[in-house]
Length: 35
Image 1 (tube, helix red, strand yellow):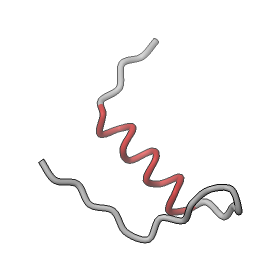
Image 2: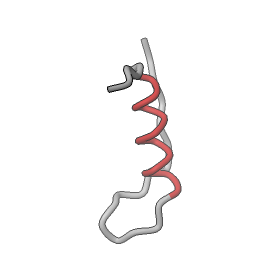
Image 3: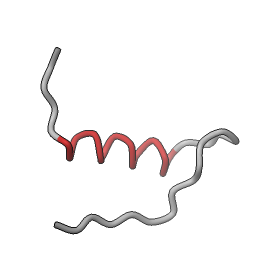
Image 4: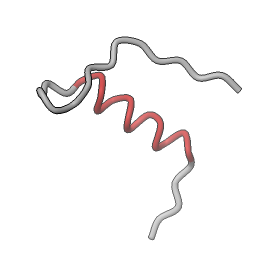
């Protein structure tokens, strides 16, 4: 199994939510990350 950083998962999830066009996935309008 490949090791991936937490930021890779963050960006993947963000892109899915931002660009998906589905009734079953919540639309992402804005995201920010602190720390």
